[in-house]
Length: 238
View 1 (spheres, rainbow, N blue to C red):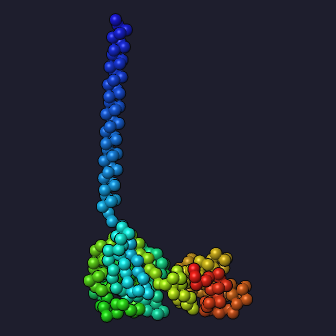
View 2: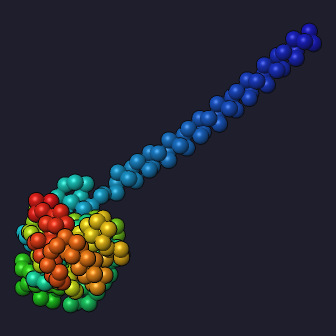
View 3: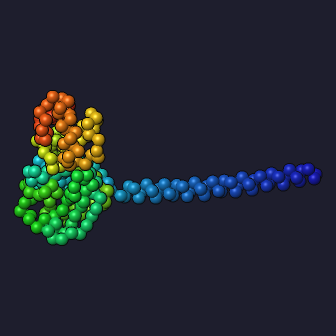
């Protein structure tokens, strides 16, 4: 009888332990499930934005969750001051003076300070008129500023030749842009350029270019021309 009582007591103890374990498991499961549901709806409720700018069209397109929701006219860089072709992010948002339409969206471009902003010269919208920045009507930049958060991706395109835009341009010391960056990267791959890739044509790139031109039996000069591009392996279909 005593043994039976002990067995019953042990079984009762086991049942209690199992019950506690099941309750603890259910509580953990409910907490994890709640966190997953909260995270899911938080992410679902947070839209993903993308800005795509076509320099040749003089248009800025705003996408929300892969759907174009806005289209704005813009002004781009003037000859000699190209807008930065490439993929960037908005890294600063500022309320600047009326010369910039009161709003500034700064981009993480390597070779200078570029951004999307308004202008006191709204008559330039639709043309190539800036020093590389993207200008918008003041009412438009204020609307865009209020929509997109920091970290928004910005793609700037100008033609079908990637970093070369609508085609090769002759590069000279002092020039800057996506094409300069592409040349630096190529000459680094070929073993000629050893400095930091900045997208700015400075003395380090000039010395690397001269050595490359000499080795390839090209005319040694400061200008980067079509013959140099081709010798590096670039073609305008890239």
